[in-house]
Amino acid sequence: MSEEVRETENMTMADLEKEIDASFQHVDQGDDFPVWDKLRQFKEDKTVLTVTVEGVVKSGVIAYVDGVRGFIPASKLSLSYVEDLEQFLKKEIQVQVIDADEEGKHLVLSARDVLRDKERAERRARIEQVQVGTVMEGKVESLQSYGAFVDLGDGLSGLVHVSQISDKRIKHPSAVLKVGDPVTVKVIAIKDGKLSLSMKALLENSSQEEVVEHVELPKSEAIGTTLGDLFKNIKL
Image (tube, rainbow, N blue to C red):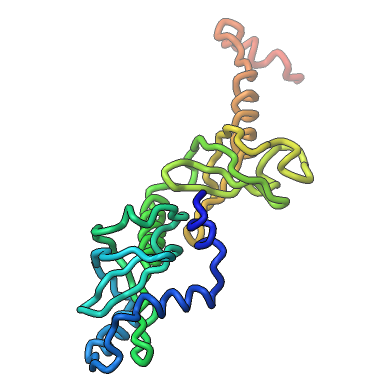
């Protein structure tokens, strides 16, 4: 990791404010900006704007909205850490206004907020396709005292409560599972966009099937049909 990247990671809020000030140093403070009312409205409405990255500075990038210079901090460019800011230069990205300070002539934008909202919407759409009772394959991604989180792929995950992991009582999920284990789970509930999963339900279903398989019906030739068979156990 380069020295410049380390410095960006270790920036304090004061450092970030200085960088924002520096990014606007070429703005004419005496100009009248009637557009600021519009920018504040964009912020209030959480309007999604498409902008082109026109410059790269130490801790972020520069883009313009209606002629006003906007600063996008590196931490607001993506859902994950960005090491190379140059990759965004001259590219179009979608952003929202998160700060519109007319007095200081500071306009701060965020692409991360837009990406997070899109991710949530896509996840909701995928969850809507899942039905209670669906059996899915996944991998254990983390263990908590109250249960195991399972990665189901395609951006979906769910919780197997500790009471739903085994048909035996266990104190902690680690008694049965470890991170990375492949598991088969059943969706037992969907609430507030969250999936509740069960491994125990599949074990119970398996046990019931085994019981049915071991039930033997009498052969047809062993079933008597004569009157003698019908009345042989009746005492007059």
